[in-house]
Picture (cartoon, rainbow over the protein chains, first blue to last red):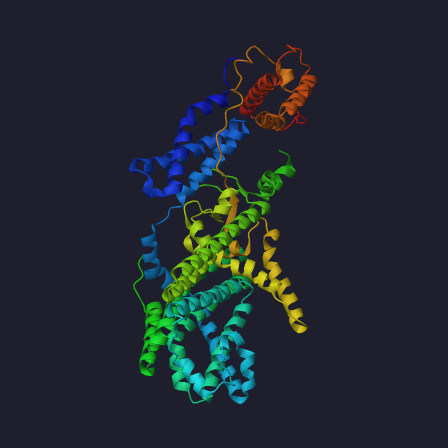
Length: 331
Length: 300
């Protein structure tokens, strides 16, 4: 009896070479991606994977060598993700994102976008009215750091200067643009993430953001700088505010799915809404990047009100058309 | 199987109890269950710490390099360019470090890889880029929001608000403690989870090592029937660990238990290996006939 090998030993001896071959191929695929594999190696992986899977189920039923089953489980898991985790390459994925995924995701959020927009707009109007009545309200809406001297105690001449400021030599344009972009993007991501708490914090952020705009507008209009201020704020504002409204919408869609999942489970609903909203959010980061460029460069370099208004309007039309223009859906 | 067992299985308890907590079934399209292990809290926490260390190190290195370049060149436009690089670098590191690595073929950041973890889609399907984005964007409320509240200081009403905020955001932090798959908020929002999928090395078969040395050592069926599968696996662990004192203790116990009357000068390791091979052969044989003996108390 002792001279004979165990059945499970023979089972292993017959297949071990294939497992090791699969292991080397997997290591190659995991480090360099599928591009590093040769054509026949690529075809070999699924075959070896199925073989390993069948080995695993046999091993579970005939072998009591636990290190062997653990090894096969690990090997099959790795192979499973290589075989079924098919990925497109980066250029293709980027193209798909800009051509289809992003506009589609934004369109799917139209209801939330509307709500988010209305919240901001109402907050803007309310803050505007309040600050016009009593300028002390200004400080409730705008914190000192962001105001940077632009508050009711400032002189009209100073306020005008902030709208048409030429950059000084030290504080360069691109540094400003970068700062604005990173700051806004962080806030947008925050609005998105907060949506999970049943929409309320996101709604609060939208209201705060809208109120801040209203307060600034009220301040500038009270000094008869309304037209100039709108131009100065909106040259980047159409892009930036649109992006923030979209970030709010993305947050709302998650919160809504968590609160009212419908006939799916709460977890499934949250996951589905989260992935769709995430695509829109990736786009929001792109929009904020554009807004940062417009704010940092555009506002400082373009000093003519008319030119500012046309850039602002042009950007708004561009975004609206890009997102909502009906297009052929490819299957 | 008893009737209660059947009812339990029908209700779906069977599978869950068989794996115990921390296991998750993932049935491949070929119909094989991969039996994934959910990443433990400790592993995931250490992975996060490692990643934060790498991130912090990266940011410090970036700052030092920027400062040195700025000090050496002393050009005004260079300061500005450095400012841009630094701001963008920190932003990208903070937000896209995790995403960039998790989108890759290993679906794990360096920290996770070191702990043998990876991110998977909870339904076992493809892990898409938007899922990775969603799970990492949620980090804002899970890590940075509580940090903000804990760092904030205030008096009177402010203090009360900050306390409430800290409690509220604390709920997000401890969220993984309250669901079966230990998913954090970002995992829920993205439909993902973190599992243990370490690279394993195929170890030598213990039934094969020292086979020549163990030649001629035979055990009777009665001697081999002293133990079941559980004890076999313990024996396997002991042999693989190879600690000499444990080997001696275990060998002594088995010798007594089975009433060993063979050569007394047999080395412990050889004896245990031979007994392991014999026991495994016996149990595997009986398993082929449909009798899986769980442990030594299982007399069927």
